[in-house]
Image (cartoon, rainbow, N blue to C red):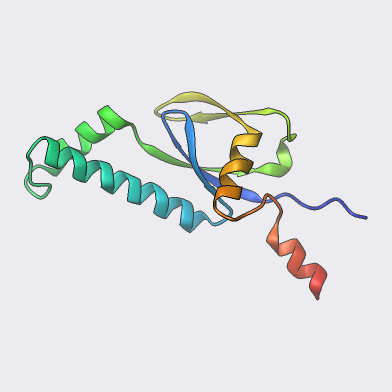
Length: 124
């Protein structure tokens, strides 16, 4: 029996923590954008600023206080299941993530760590 191929996943990281993981890049980007918008809206209310008036101040303050939501591509085939993954993120530097954290986030979204394309090929 052949070993199942692991998937390429997209994780959303904020201040070094994995918040979301998906095999679909659009889903990960959507999650990051949604969280960014929520925080910017909260900051605008907190500072009593109309987002349209001084959007740059809202963006700066939101980023400074809450960090950014980074989407990072991870090929799970390159890592062992019980290991720590080290990635570099421009505004954070080196970030260390447990492989198990990524799998847990995938499972929270109803996904697994295996490549769906491989299953499709086997069915043909």
